[in-house]
Image 1 (tube, rainbow, N blue to C red):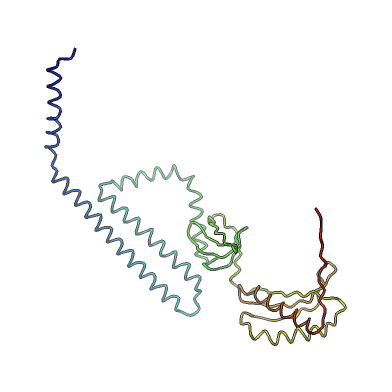
Image 2 (cartoon, rainbow, N blue to C red):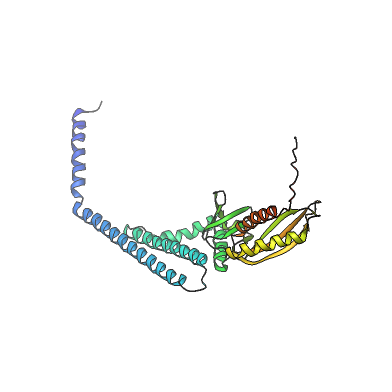
Amino acid sequence: MLNPYILLTTLTEQPNAWRRYFDAIDWSKIIDAIVSTVVEIVLFTVLFLVINAIGKRLINHGFNAYQARTGVSSTRATTMHALSKNVLGYTVFFFYLYAVLTVLGVPVGTLLAGAGVVGIALGLGAQGFVADVVTGFFILLEGQIDVGDAVTLGTITGVVTSVGLRTTIVRSYDGTVNYIPNRNITIVSNLSRSNMLALVKLPMRPEADLKHVRTVIDQVNTDLVPQIKAIRQGPDVLGLTDNGDGTFSYQVKFLTANGEQLNVQRRFLAAYVKALHDAGIDLPTPPLNLRQS
């Protein structure tokens, strides 16, 4: 059975041992170290915030001056502008993190040396990331696509909203936002780098008075073409064409500014149909085909 005297003595000595331990701690030194560390971190934070702000201002100033030059692609400049700010942000954050870890006494050099060993283990898993970065670098270097371009990337068609080193963001025409890893971009179809074709096809009967049709078409072209600045070439009247299914169409071709082809096509189609109707020229309509499944 435990001696009560020994138990009482043990319980009495334990608080005294803890008290001597806390009394031996140099609290002023610890508080000074904590305050010094906090002050250093705050100063580094302010310093890197200032560096980041100055860097962004210099980048903005440089790209504003660059865009003011004649013959400079605004979409190209916008793409490189956004990428430059991203690179600046990542660089500043890396050095800020390095400074904070150093202040906290973390052996950054040892961690970096160990990261080389870990990097070998993660190398195979990072192949996709490396492929994204390399592909993204060449896409930007060669200027294949820029922000605002209408593109087709594989099965995705839409407008480019962001071009980065790892992913490219394309907004489809229905509003869907697509994040595409750069390594998956194998064929780039850029619809914004040249004039686009607008083809107007008017259904026509083979026995129609083609001379009269041509007169009406020419009159519409004379009246409407000066109003549409998006037309780059044409109109070229191709005339009566076999559609390959036993029907015929009277075709007129335009080359338009990129993105304006559908608008030009619709305006001229409406104007042609109205003018031909007013001239008494009947246009055939395809028969309604109702099928039951």
